[in-house]
Length: 365
Image (cartoon, rainbow, N blue to C red; front, side, top):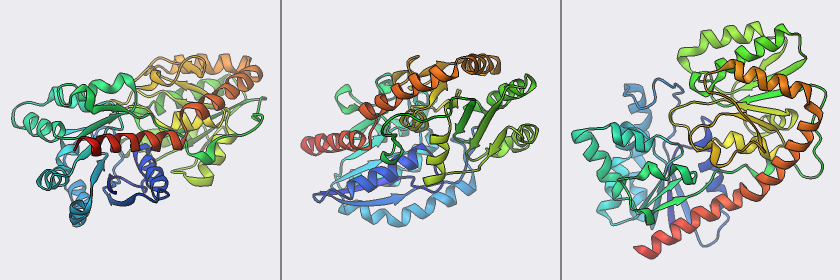
């Protein structure tokens, strides 16, 4: 079978590009498959700029159209488009060719905004958006509560759930061996206001004022419009906080395994099910996050703590509680999270679920 993957691949590094990279690597090991790709990556990292038009974005994407001829050779096309009108429009040339040659295509939504976008559109835009999505052979969401993203676009039998995963190399084997003397915090995501980075840094400033011993590592690309503000916080906290820029591979693995608390208090409007949370559980970290998007489908209070959105005091109070009960929390929650992640979020489970969707699509052609 010839399977064509269309979507972003590293670089830049983010949840969707990592998922596509791992999927490609795993599928290439299957002798019965011939896998090819069309890379649609974009460099932009901005919460305000998502879904907006820019000449730079258009030119960055145009290069992917050079490979349109690959579609004619495919038996199935798997895509991971954006969740906005522009995100779908950019994939129209791919979908149009699929329809022309009667090649089934799958839309995998890595987030929780597609449905909201559809409801917000009117007239011609809404019709175009609907036309190409409802003709997909299958839609994939990240968790049960996110099925509504395809409501009014795909029938229930065409909607599948495939949870995210942690890369195999990240899983800790054997007894957990984390620092239990002080909080070692990791924030690993794009530094966007809607991902809660400002609230995290403000809470850390309060810990510093109380002279609580802690260490924090921050990694990810800073969104363009927040650079000065975030760099100001980082300078003020430089004795406690280290900013690493964008990390991947062994550097990312080291940060995840050296930390004991992972924090992502996101309220990002497109948030689905951050891979970073699963990676943090696989490496035995206590989770601090928000009840947002598809997060509560995979995270409960057994995995750590929920904090209020846009509330640095809520984050501060949790960190203060952890500081007072660190030893038992690090061992008990950390050990639980490793086993929980192994059971539910391996690469194999992710890839096998994708293949089941592909097989279902082939059978229904």
